[in-house]
Length: 214
View 1: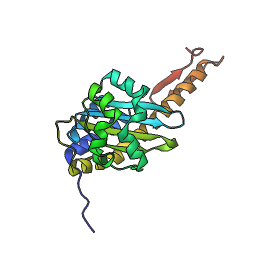
View 2: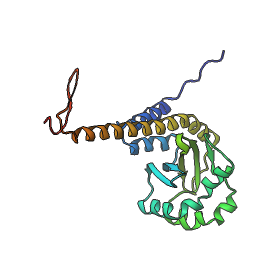
View 3: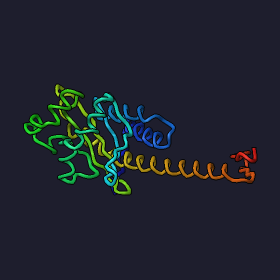
View 4: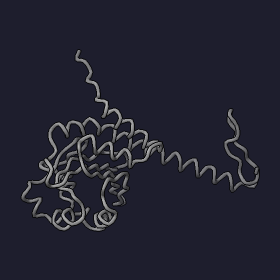
């Protein structure tokens, strides 16, 4: 039986940060920095796309201007040759880099590069993944480097690949935490609408008292 490969310390820190952010105990902005640094990137985007509503939920961004995000959502998301290439080739749940998505000549001639990337953000090389989530949602992660940097290496993609299962799990966990918080909030609001006083107690003391009880 082969010996299980240990996870490098830096990757362990990134993994811990992903779950902390999913639980709301650490800002996603901090975890974004660690995730980007793990593969020596410069910028990062992580968002969840919901095909049924065509709405994208931005989870984390690093060094992407707000106006660039607005332009992307308004128009360029439909012309993103990286994501379109990954979807066309069905590259789900594994790391890939831009040469696998589109050849360099076609990329440089694309509207996405000339009218968006060159003008709005310093992105040329990309490493990323499409993560299948529950409910038909797709998690999309992209880590980028400027044109004057080297493209992502096989080792960089292997590092990202080891982190992807944890990123996927953290996005699912984030969803469950949000649902639980919304359910709890709705239940407490319902108690406040009752005409009778209600007090919720635990072994350690008062949890909640509705308006009548107060």
